[in-house]
Length: 230
Image 1 (cartoon, rainbow, N blue to C red):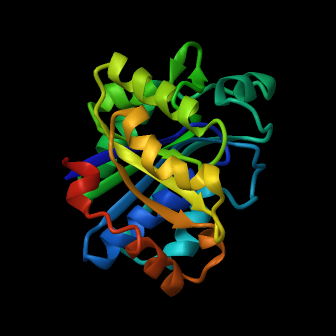
Image 2 (cartoon, rainbow, N blue to C red):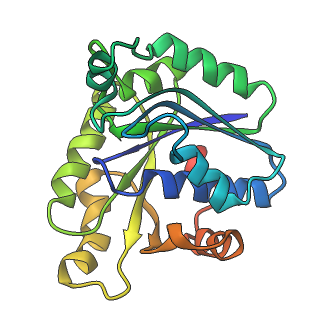
């Protein structure tokens, strides 16, 4: 059994699509997969959230389990969003316990954070603290374009400073016609971040039907061993 935390260099870089891609690859290999979202923000009751997107992209097979611990309507950091609506914030202990419960019946447990690595879940606790509590490797989803090198380096340095292993980088949305900046990122990201670039998902992958999405995920050319054990 493997637990992997999926974080990003910020909001909107494609964490959910990459999480769904990892789930799709493992499901296609016949594995039971669980996806945990400790906190969802910017989504009201009854509205589709990130886990609904994971289920849609993977086709929602019986071998997939998804679990969301809390959601808050304001599109803010979970700690702030929870305080604004007068509800308790998710604790690191709750997130770790939920991942442990899911680990009992699944080969792969993916824990998708909210925003970036140091986004506060509650109080001073962050997504990074969840990874520390799980002693789990972290996959960093990044973008392609200006600012990417700085944001990615800061994220991997923060992981190293906490003794967390970075499993590698994935570009969450690769443009159909990459410009000079994007092309240079392919060479510069691994050197600046100090970890391998495992792959990239094409822009628009999140709009595909499950069969096409699985093909896009397979095009990442990254194996489960590269992601979770390297």
